[in-house]
Amino acid sequence: MKPIKLSEANADFFERVFEVVRLIPEGRATSYGAIANVLGAKRSSRMVGWAMNASHQKDGIPAHRVVNRNGVLTGKMHFNDPSEMERKLFAEGIVVKEDVIQNWKVVFWDPIEIMNDL
Image (cartoon, rainbow, N blue to C red; front, side, top):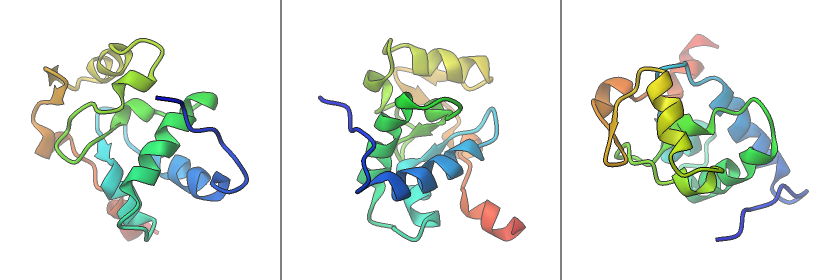
């Protein structure tokens, strides 16, 4: 699968995604759909995934904290090493077994929480 490149057509949405991802607290994770929802683009979780694929071209974006709605590390193949995502999560205290975050309901961070703080 070819990585999605940042372009003028998708740069604004991707930057908005990156802003949300930078807010994910260490030791927590969220889903593509939760990010899409907070951006007012509820049906755009796939586009959020594309942004995460492109995030590896930028520094300071904790893409390892974004997984699918069930806590599965579906984006791991877009890291330089497929085990990098799990290693980064483990370093933050998140337990992963067979590519699934354990205790997902506790680890899950809903970015809608940031809206309450604004």
